[in-house]
Length: 84
Image (cartoon, rainbow, N blue to C red; front, side, top):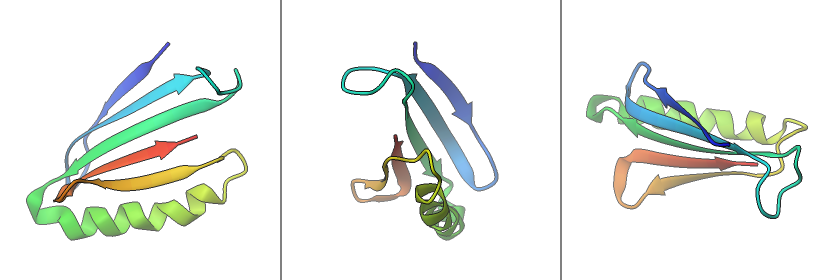
């Protein structure tokens, strides 16, 4: 079962958070999350700084196996995060 949650917040044009419990190669209790966020042009710096500040505390959580953050190509407004 896949869960898709639309997200919009201050400085964010649009975003999607998708979760998929279990799956191939993952324990049944594991959850994989993919978050795609598009910042508004005028909020690129604020959104980048906010997202970057969340990486270390999230990686330190006991249930976080791995968290990767990526810029989507050369577009500094688009971010993708993969969390296991």
